[in-house]
Image (tube, rainbow, N blue to C red; front, side, top):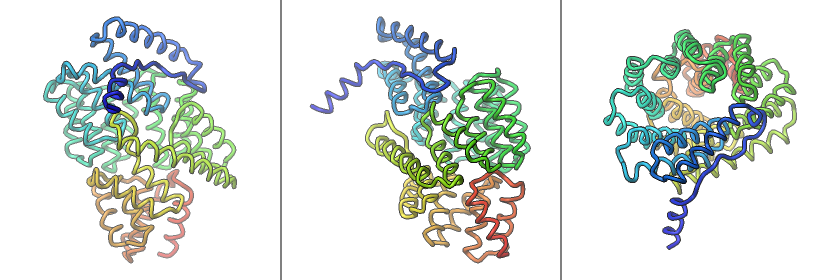
Length: 426
C-alpha cells in the first residue's frame, strides 16, 4: 500500500523550477527560462498529453540541472516528463534520447547505452543520438564503438557537439594537438555566451592546462567568464591556475564563487585543496567531509530509486584516496569497476587504490588496462610511473614519470611532488 501510494504521488506531482543562486540568478537567461517554464507547465496542466510541451520541459529541466548542479531534483523532474510520454508511447524517439541523456547524467551508463541503442534503431539518421552513443560507449570503455559513433555523428552533422566529442576521443588516444584543434573548432562553431560554447571553451582551457600552457588556459577561462558572467566552470579553472601560481587566497575566492551557484563535488574538492595549500587544514577537512557525505547520499539514493541520485563510487574512491582512507577507496573503486570494467579511468582509480593498499600486482594489472589507449593524461602517467616503481620496473617507471611531468602540467601539488621525488630515486 505504501509503494502504491508513493507511485501515485509520483504520477501526480508537478515539478517547477527552483530558484538559482549567485550570479546566475541575475542573468537575463534565467528570467527567460522561468517564463518559458511557466508557459510549458500551464500547457501541460491544461493538456497532460501535450507531448511537445513535455519534451520541451524535460529539455529545460536537463539544462537547468547542468546550470545549477541540482541533479537529484531535476533528474526526477525530467524523468517525470519523459515517463509521461513513454508510458502510452514506448517508442517515442525524442523521449528515449532524453531518457538516455538523463541516465548518463546519473552515471547509469549501461542503462543509458541500452536506451540510446533502442533510440538509434528507431531513427538511425539523428546526430544527437549518436552523440549520446559516443558518451555512453566511452564511459563503458568501448572505445572502438565510440569512434564509430563519432564518425557517424560527424557525417550527419558536423557541429559544436560533434567537434567536442572528436576532441575528447583524440585526448583519450593521447593526441593533445589534435584534441586542441577539434575543441577550437567546437568553440568557433558556437555562439559566444551560450552554455555549450563556454563549456567547450573551458574544456579547451583544461587541455592547455594538461600540456602546461597555463597562460593560454587562463585566457580561455577568462574569456568564458566574461562571455557568461558567474559561469562556475571557468571560475574553477581560474582557481586551479591561481593555485599553480601559489595565489591561494585568490584560488579560494574563485572556488567559493563557483561553489555559490552550483552544487559540484569537484569544486568542493578544489576548495579544500586551496585551503590546504594555504595552511587552513581545519577548513579543508570540514569541506571534504561535507563533500563525501553528499556524494555518499547520492550514491545510496541511486541504488534505491533510478529516478534520483548518481552512482558516485569512482569519485568517492578518488576522494578517499586523497584523504588517506584507503579501505574505503578500494571498496568504492571495486564497486565502480564491477559496473564498467573496461573504462580506462575506472581502471586507473582502482589501480591507485590497490597501490595505496600495497597490492602492487593488482595495481600493475589495472594500470596496464588504463594505459591501453595511449592516453597522455598527466595524472594517469604519474600514477603509472609510481605504481611501476613500486613493482620494481624502473625502466617503465622512469618513462611514465618523465612523460607525466614533461609539459609541467597543472595537476594536484601532492602528486607532482611525489612524482618529482620518485624520479630522484631513478
